[in-house]
Image (tube, rainbow, N blue to C red; front, side, top):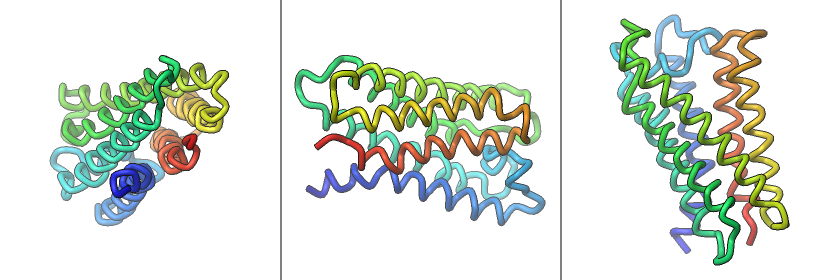
Length: 198
């Protein structure tokens, strides 16, 4: 029972950790503007408090997202369509990629160096893994009435993330578009456990 409760609360806890870290460390860093500066700047090498932000802003939320996806896998009974299992695995990989962004931070002194490129690649992998997982969830939920609400939420969040990553940055600051992508993922994490079939 305690394990089930932990898994159920993992998604909302991930969202809370990320939001508190973003607000707290953003307020502590002089001249940091939430509307203009990327989230990853708070964890960049050479920035005061970067290690703590990477822990509470990337590592912990990512680990909790993985736990939430493990719960998703464990809720799948025998005979679950393969697409649903693949979906859960891709969503789990997305959480791992989010956590890894805290292990491989940006370099504030050189945005174009290898460390910064690895961080950017992990961000892209996080996005692609989630959107692929959401698409597989949508496919697997056909004929599985209990999984449809979760699949609809996942698909809506994935489409919003793709728009944020590739369209919205043309009409708003890139930092805002990035935050909208993160918030779509956060919405999925916050609601996923409530929408799982019994």
